[in-house]
Amino acid sequence: MKHALDRIEVGSLEELKTKGVITVKGADRPIAVFFDQGKIHAVDNRCPHLGFPLNRGTVKDGILVCHWHHGRFDIHSGCAFDLWADDVPSFDTELADDVVYVSANPRKELGLEYYRGRLIQGLEQNIPLVQYKSLLGLLKQKLTAEELCRELTDWSSDHLDQWRDGMTTLSVVSRLWPKLKETTRLYAMGTASRRISQNSFGMPAPVKRPALDNQNQTVEQLARWMKHWALVRQRDGAERTVLTLLDSGASQLQIAEALFGALYDRVYANSGHLVDFTNKSLELLDVIGWDEAGRVLPMLMHELTQARGEEDKGSWRDPHDLITLVKEAEEALARIHPIRKNWDGNIQDNFLETFNGEDPKQILESLIGWVEEGIPYREIGKQLCYAAAMRLAWFPESNEMGDWFFPMHTFTFTNAVYQSMRHGKSPILARGLIQGAMSVFTDRFLSVPRARIPEPDKSALLLSEQDLLDLMLKSLDEKQRWSRLPELVATYLHNDYSRVSLVDTLAMATLREDVDFHLIQALEAGMEQASLWQGQAEEIHIYIGVARHLAAHCPTR
Image (cartoon, rainbow, N blue to C red; front, side, top):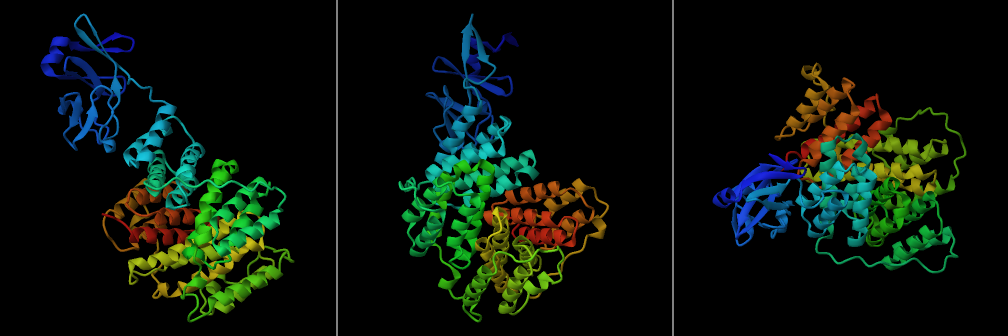
């Protein structure tokens, strides 16, 4: 019973000595009160690892042992000797007139600064359990996506020497955030945090390179230097140049042009990863603020200067010399800028048929022709993304699982190209359309024979929205044909149910699995592209492609 404002009666001292441990109900949790070596101690009765009741553990020489997974704790402070188990909250105790009392609330105030500190500890020690619990606490403190992303970005810039999948995941999560429910948000941000920690664990701290002292360089000269340092593979020069570019007051378009202009000099660099990573870094800055650019963009410089393009390999050389075709098309694109005609919004050509053609030269000539006709770069990019999404939708089960790598990267690459052009009309940024079109072309044999585009499941048309969403998750609990989830997605969209709930469900289906970042990356790209076609057949086809890709990879062990 309550004895005072923040005090709970446990029992007599003699009773506690006899029993060794007594549990009581605290303000918001069960509390285990122990008697050990003549002293009284109290901790949260739930083991911080997986919740086993600590009153069923044992205490010896001040060490509390949880027998479920053998986690060991200091009985007084609650600190874990086994870091993977996490610290258990401890409580103040009091003895008055041979009656034992315990505080109703933990000794440490579990507020904003507490959870921030715990998150940093979890990141440094690479303990996902601590990270997830800290993020849950921060979410309860009403931190926004911007604030959480800033926390993780600031930590990453001090511990990551290069942009890796953790930072891409963080950027993807920031884009998905408005469409995610509370539980999915925890899964999503926790996944980003865990991967960032894994990327940096055991690695040396990054070298911090300063901007150049001389501020007289023009933006054009700095952009040329970026291209030069990328060409000669000199990270120090590239990083100092990009920091100087930021100090110069360059616009977001000029920064994007300097970065993409340098990386497009290597054709489809690192299988498309470099373009996507660069776009994701800029999208993250859109969320957390461009004042963080000096912490974010240096992480790109390793891959920018060390990347390999398709000109260094062989698949774009034979049987067609795509490298030469790309360079010729880029030269033609540069000559027709600025656009000389005003587009009336009408499209006469069949973009999908053209992008799926068998003659790469004709594909690029058509692309250049569209630009000459005045069709905006972003409209061409939108159509290109749709063609790339259809490679996912048509991907047959006769292919090997590893073959998914190619059309998936093409799709995320083309989405990155499209998104990068939001900064403004620029032939430098539009170079990605040419490389993306050739990537779609190289994937053509992976659509032979084409998988059937599923129709809505007539037996499921009368199901409620929630029943269909539940059925989607259930369909991924065991290996099934890859078209089952796409059928359910087609049915859901046919009924014109909420796109927000669909994205949340597909995100949860992805995040609950032990898969790499490519699946959540493809989902986010699909969400972005499908939103451009809402209510049209193309929207359904894009979601079908994403769902097919997801179904092929679920469930994991």
